[in-house]
Length: 262
Image (cartoon, rainbow, N blue to C red; front, side, top):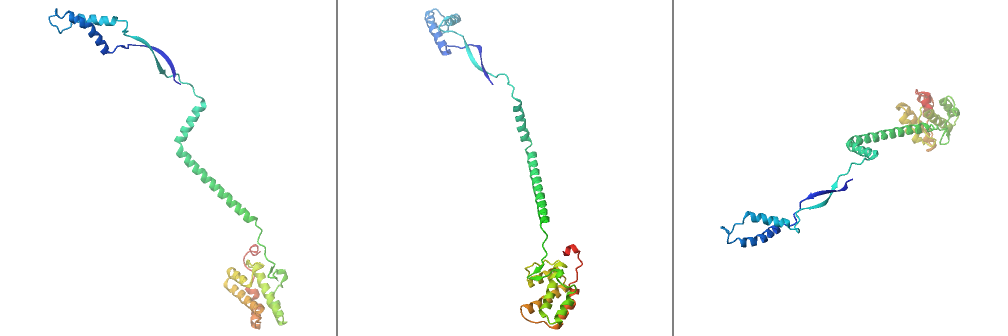
């Protein structure tokens, strides 16, 4: 910090102004001019000796001190004080930040992208874990009160159904054929039929999962079932015989792996 120091400086300060000095010299020389007016050969010229005498007289006047010693205050820069170490560190840090702003900006962007990628990876992992933890879809045992469990059905459904038809059990024949159809679609062909699926929904799902020749048989059987149950229209012997005979070949076990069928 700057501090005050007093130094003595000698300055010559002319108290009287030049005008006052000349006025005093004029006053001194006036009588001399009048006294020597008649003696001088040239009345308008002032002798050099007279000027010197006048100046000496003015200097000798005690009221006209030519010089004076004064004190002048002056700002003097003090010695440099040592700053704490953390001041230097803080200054260097902000200087580094100012010089490295572009680098810091790119580092921030890279960190944000890395965090985003990490978040998305965690999200995908969580989704996969949640999906894997879900219980496998339960294969229905009944569809609209019809038992479709394989163990509840005969081994040769087509032959058993035709035997019932010959015995005069028309409804039992069609019910066995329709139950067998649903059981084969669910357990052998992995058609996503639910326990509340209607005949129309079962046919739509079968068309999506089966080739045309097999879905054609499913359509014929469902239409005959609906006509007999809801329309009270009894099918012809030839049609029922055809359904019973083609049942095993039309709904044969699928070639897909067993785990896919279950």
